[in-house]
Amino acid sequence: MDWLKQWSRSRWGRLTAWVLLAAAGVSLVEMGLVMIAGGDWLHGIRVSNPMARVRAACLFWFGWYCLRYGIHQGRREWAGFAGKVFLFIFSTAMALLAAEIGLRFFFMQLQSSQSLDRAEVIAKKLNKETIKSSHPLAAIIRKSEDRLLVYELRPGLEMDFGHNRLRTNRQGFRASHDYKIEKPLNSVRIIGLGDSGMFGWGVHQGQDYLSVLESNLNARADGRVYEVLNLAVPGYNSQLEFQMLKSRGLAYKPDIVVVGWCDNDFGLPFFIPQEGQWFRKDVSFLYYLLFNRKRLPEVAVSTLNDRRDFDEGKVPEGLRQGVDIKGVRDSFMELMALGRKHGFKVVVMGPMGKEPPVIFKEIGIPFYNTFERIDAKKYPEDYLVFFMHPAAAGHRVLAEYLEQDLRDRGWL
Image (cartoon, rainbow, N blue to C red; front, side):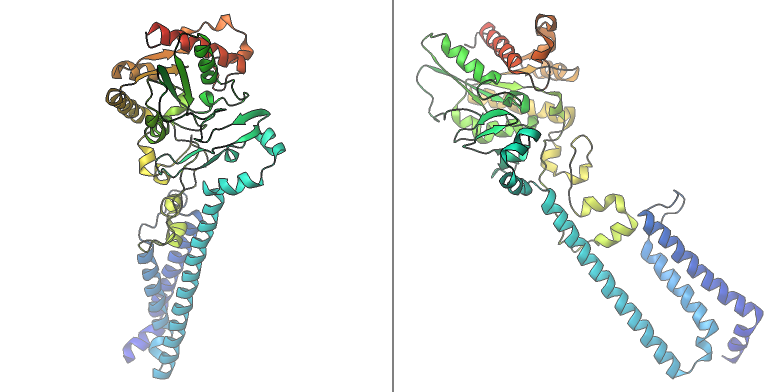
């Protein structure tokens, strides 16, 4: 032991000690830079196993301490040193635990402020002026008891919404009257599935094209009763539209189902159920915050505000299945299977890009591409016939063409 003490005082011993201290310092500085960046630092340094790097830094530092001081100390000094090390480890562990708990609490609060549940609070605070000026969807929807449906219109609404009158019946459909579950004798029942376009965003009650269609059909006075149920909900995609049919629409035994197509049906619905994971014991949120920040939302909380820019890890698996071309194709194939099983006909109507007609032809589903079938030059631009949210005059035009199409198909 005496030779080691003598060697530690030599030039090489002192140099070895300072090399060990420098190695420990470099490891800690590198760790600090990586923690600031939350992952890679300048795309050149990546700590794939941070805890191994911490252990190495501690060993380097301990080696330096031993060469400089430890081998020259007695038992009393070592006992004091061990007590200081234990106190440092304990206090650090408590600080990290507090940081972990605090981070989880922060995400829990963030979750509650952004989740669909927040819509219930927002709706109660909105006044008529804010509703007129901003079209807040939260004012007219609620969380659905059907987990796969996610959200639905509030029943019994009677309000001004975006400078336009809005009513929903007791079933939660945009309509001025209720519909009985039992079909009237000698009747034709049509159900519409869609999003804000079919719902009638920006037009008064009764001006959406399904309401106009119901009025036009009954004005024919041909001895039949025509009922057109508007089950459209703003922000829905195809998957939620068909879930609405399964959850609510099939009970009305429709003869015809009209799907209002919009190209954002390829995307996620407007609201995504937020799924917190704050009580997980298999991961450390603090670890991901420091060393893998990109994946932190995946293990902590889903905060999806823009459906055009989403991380699949944030979205529940059930909703991801309805996104993109394959998801839309699968949804429409299921719809056709439901039509065969329950005896209703299906037609899809709306302005379509390249992909939808290919899908519909492949499946064998009737469709009406308004881009091709309606002459844009025939109507003023302010009708907005091809826009996502047509004007009232545009809705009247769509109702006329839809009625003509259904008549040509021999469905009326």
